Image (tube, rainbow, N blue to C red; front, side):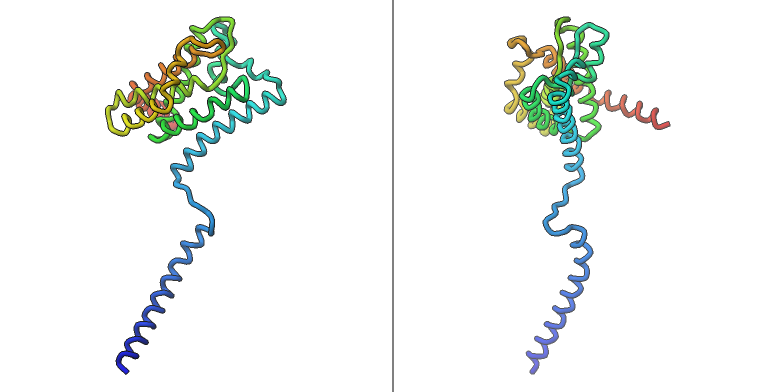
Length: 234
């Protein structure tokens, strides 16, 4: 009789614990329906930023190809002309063909994500620097009778930044990323030389220069942008 009584008490205790456990778990389970995976907020933000930019590029190219017959490309950089200055802003958003855009999409996503790993603030600063330096270099030094479009200047800027950051910072993470980037995209560096006709090697060259400058002066740039942000909030 003693063993049966102990068994009954243990069973009652287990039932009580399981009832309490079920009650506590119900509100948590209801927040995540079956089959739904909750993404980390940081990863979700990275996907939204990079994915949003890529979607914008493909939408613009679709509209330009199917509706405007490539007339948007006239907004590219025309070196040393006043109207060509607007291309510094618009050129990275425009592409000459589907193949041109496809060639820039994957490296932009990979290299852009590696830049974005250290936060949106750094990503925004690096993007702004390489965007402007690449465009301005093309406007100043490319052939006057040429038109330059494409996001490859920004891609080369990210490449230059990631490689130079490993040199300037000398920490394990930056050096490791630089080694991986060099292994994956090292051959792209030849794109800064005038080997192929129809390729904006000036955009590649000055994009990489912008990336190196961003890596060298990143702390000062971050401080400057923070000061501007504080002034705008007043």
